[in-house]
Image 1: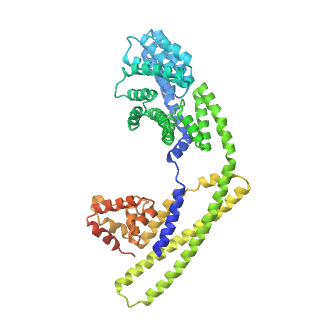
Image 2 (image 1 turned 180 degrees about the vertical axis):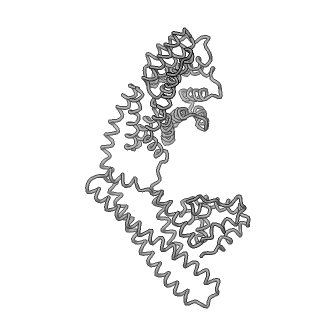
Image 3 (image 1 turned 90 degrees about the vertical axis):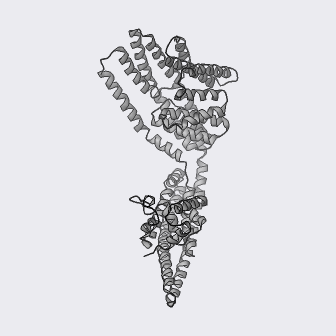
Length: 532
C-alpha cells in the first residue's frame, strides 16, 4: 500500500508540471527581445572600432574605400541613414579615383539599402545606370541578384493576378543569371536556387535547399534568420502553420542577436500568432517590429506595421472578458485541487495508522527468522522516511495553494485579471518538479547511504556514474532507486519520472548491457544493497 501512496503523490506533482509545459522557442524569443539592447550595444561597439580605424587611417583611396565599405556593411541592416551616408562616401572616393569598378560597387551598395527600404523607383534607376558587361563575376552576381530581388519585391508589393506573375518570372530570369556567377558551394548559390524554386511554386524542391542550409552549423546569425524566414513561407503555402511559426521564431531570435533591424520575420510571426488568438505575444512582437522599422528608417514598412497594431490592440481589449472567465475557472480548479489534496492527506493519515498497526504486529512476531525481520525493518524505514517526507510536502503545498487561492479571490474581487496571469506565470512548476526529485534523492540516500558506491561497483571504471557537485542521483540511478524501494513496474516508474514506458525500458536495457554482471542478476544485485 505504501507504494501506491508514493505513486499517487509523485504522480500528482508531475501532472502539475505537465499542465505548465511551455513553448521553449517562444520563451527564448521573449528573453532575447529583453536582451536586444545588449546585442545592439555590441553592434555599436563593433562599429565604433571600425570608425576609430578609419579616423586613424592615412591610406590610399582603395583602403579608405574599403574602410567605408566595412562601415556600410555594419550599418546596411542596422540603420538605413548611416548605411546611405557611407555608401555616398564610397561613391565620392570612387569618383575621385576615377575607378569604374569601385563606382559600380558603390552603386550596388546604394541599390541594396534602397530596395530594403522600399524605394523601388530609385532602385530601378540606379540599376539601369550600371554597365555590368566585362566586369568581375562577383559584381555580376550581386547585380543580377539585386535585379531578381527587385522584381520579386515588386511582385509582392503589387500582389495581383496580372503584374505580379510577370514580375516573378522576370525576377527568376535574373536570379538564373546571378547563379551563373556564384560558387555552387556558397550560401548565396543555395539560397537563391531555393528562392527561385519557391517563386516558381516548386515547394518540395525549394524546401530541400533551405533544409540543407538550416542544417549547416557554419551559417551566420543573419544567414540563419534569412533561411528560416524564407523556409517558413514555404511551410505556410503547404498549410503547415505551426512549422512556419516555429521557423519564424528561430529567424526572429537570430535577427535580434545579429542586431538586424531591417526584418520581416517578427512582424510575420505577430500576424500568425494574432490569427491563432495569441494576442499578447502578437502585440509584443508587432511593437518590436515597429520599433526596429523606425530605428532602421524603413518608412514604408513602419506604415504597414502600424496598420496592424490597432487590430491587435482591439482584439486584446475584446479578450479581457475571456481572460476574466479563465481566471475564474482557474480559481475553481485551484479549489478542486485543494479538496483533492485534503482527501489525499486523509488517505495518508489512514495509511499512517495502518503502518503503526503493522509495526506492532512486526514487534510481536519476534519468533520470525532474522533475515525476514531485517527486510521488514528496512521496509518500515522506507515507509517512515517517505511518508514523513511527503506528509510534510503535502502540508507545504496545502499552505501555498491556500495562499494562492486567497490571492486569486482578492484579484478577482479587484477585477485585476492581468495580475492573476502574472501570478500564474510566476509559478515555476518545472523548478517544483526538480525540487521534488531532488528531495526524493536526498531521502533515498538517507536510507541507502552506500547506494551510489554499490551501484558503481557493478560497472567497469569507465562506465561508472560521475555525479556533479550538487547532484545526488542521476536518471539512471533514480530508476533503480525506485526499484530498490519496491516500485518495479516500468509503467509506474515512467509516470513518476515523466518518461514513456519505452524510454524506461531502453534506459534499463542500456544500463544492464554495460554492467559487469549478467542482465538477469543486475536487479538482484540492486536489491541486495543494504539500508542503514
